[in-house]
Length: 129
Image (cartoon, rainbow, N blue to C red; front, side):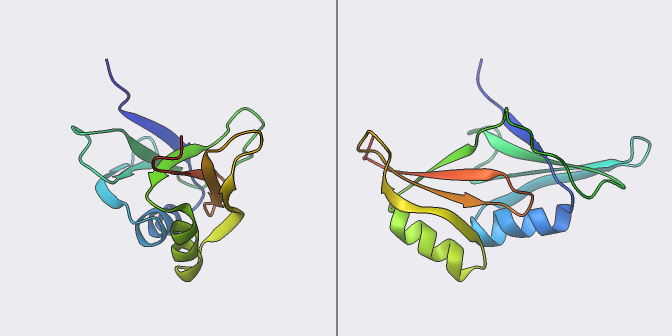
C-alpha cells in the first residue's frame, strides 16, 4: 500500500491551481470535469502520481467557500531552505503565516503558508528533522 493523494475542497479551482502551480511550483497532472455530478477534479504535484503522493483539488460547482473546521491540520512539503521558500512565496503573491524558524520545543526548521482557501501548508527544511 501507499498514499496516493490528499483531497482538498476548493471554492475557485482556477485560483487554487494558480496558487499550487505558480506560487508553490507544482504542476497540473490531470483535470477532469464531471458534468453529471457537477464537480471538477484537478490533481497537482511535483512528480507523476505513479512516483509519489499528490493533491486532489475538488471543486463542486456552485460552491465558492468551505468551512475548514478544526480537524484538518496541514499539508507538509519538504524544502531545501525554509527562509528562501518563504521569500519565493511572498514574491509570487502568496501568504506566509509563520516565518521560517525552529519549531516550538524542537530544532526542526519549519514555516507555514496559506492557500487561497485558507488551508495551511507547512514547509519543513530538509535535514533539520
